[in-house]
Length: 284
Ligand SMILES: [Zn+2]
Image 1: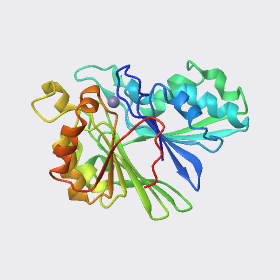
Image 2: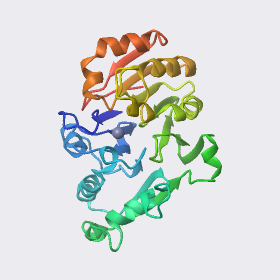
Image 3: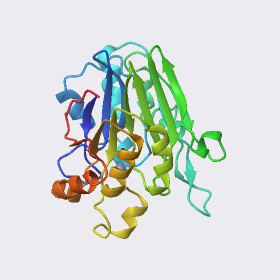
Image 4: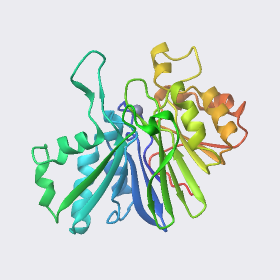
């Protein structure tokens, strides 16, 4: 895996959340598409001509705003017909409001690349570009109950997903399994998503955990309804038996308090712990 973006929403020198998963050395899966990740993709000298699966954890701008740029880069990389498969959460409405607070993933793709979308010209700019989008875990759907399900199986590759929780933003947790190795991406997650994360991350080799807040009371209270504190990261990593944890989506406060954060996680989880950097390569 290559970390394209290890940062959060702030303009702090890191790209927003984004990762590329390689199979047999070939970049195949993009996980999130945070701002700045296109530059990191170039710096990593990755050949993206087979990068056609996109997993979006949620539709906040720091996770999804770079998608058009990456799609265009992929289109000009090979100039062949492309069939993107984009997975992400179903949409949501604001309480008491008919307007969509978050579009569905297929709606987002349509807003960008559809016939009346902002970048409709990309459909035949360099070969045809076609999208197959899947909206995961709509309200009332079976997956909403928190059982992981396989969303893609190609050869030895298995991608599974479960509904996460990021306050009002519909969120998805992903796990990629290939040749006996696995990586799980927590996405941005608050405590209401922990049970689902424990289920899907069981025995995973690498758990990429988004680390935004310090332990209570050292972050604004509202942030604990959006994110997971280091103590809980340690508890979850230990309970599910992961081999390594990579902290990513690092806020400035977490970045400046690495020792404290490591100690808090280490109090529960004795395994390997790393802080992500843009461009970092990790073999699970
Ligand atoms: Zn975020």
